Image 1 (spheres, protein in one colour):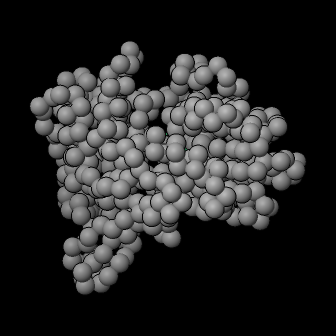
Image 2 (cartoon, rainbow, N blue to C red):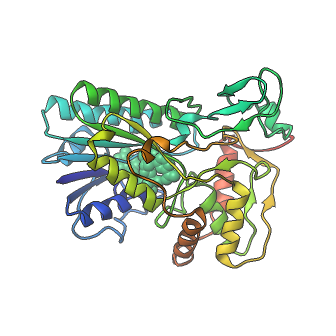
Length: 370
Ligand SMILES: NC(=O)c1ccc[n+]([C@@H]2O[C@H](COP(=O)([O-])OP(=O)(O)OC[C@H]3O[C@@H](n4cnc5c(N)ncnc54)[C@H](O)[C@@H]3O)[C@@H](O)[C@H]2O)c1
């Protein structure tokens, strides 16, 4: 098949490209090489066999050219950040997805499959259980609560302690512009796909980890932040108290999920979580980074928090497991692989202070008590 991978120069895209080539497919990449992830040139890890097209998914002519002769699309290009340029999230993540379907339908293009990259972020806080009041989906924590260091979410009815649950695909309560735009994107893909007989699948990735994950952006998360700190001889810095639960997933498991739904018609018009089968705390992750580095340090609890962060979020992966997928790589192994890669990057630097300053200026990063 001839496959278009939008955002194929990025982290998940490039690994997906490798797997598609290994599977005997012809691959074209449409990528605008966005800074700061890219520094102006195509990354060296992209194999020569890939056809490269520089351009934006928001550009009708560029996207139409990229779709020429294509049988299937992995739509992975996205705007991801913590900034307040809200409209840009919807332009790049939602409107460009609508443009993709508009071109396929209006120009009667023979695209037989579209896989879009959604995110666990669409859950917001996800599911919790109160021993008295049952399962619930609480809203965002208030600034007052966070400022007072009350990190856990109390039951809105009885004030009791909530137990975090794995969240399944029936839920969605996005609470930031990225998550809202991703929720739109998956609705556009699955609903327009069904309406116009273009088999489409949306995958809600949990936090993905692995080599090629940019260490130059603010959004690539805790692992980048911890790794660059440890590589420069400083302790990892935890936001809140570090007890937040997550289900980090290896890029290799994500690529296997991508390929599975690409090939399996049972996945068509479905939305699937792609996460881990084990929950860990952010502090556990910091300790995994220290272990990968062979360093005997301790993570630092900073008293800082990020407005809009979810307290706990863990995905229920039963639906994708029913199609025969399961995560195969432990979170420790994924951290070790990332850390070894990061340590070997000649241009890696401690971007922690820079990312913090940017998030502070945007009002995202705050100090408890402020
Ligand atoms: N990495 C994660 O943990 C994670 C989790 C959930 C969802 N996702 C989703 O997976 C997809 C891939 O993410 P990633 O981690 O590989 O990010 P990435 O930043 O490494 O890659 C994204 C790529 O898209 C390109 N791009 C951005 N805007 C573009 C545009 N307008 N036109 C063309 N190309 C554009 C960038 O240049 C980059 O190469 C995204 O849709 C993201 O929302 C990622």
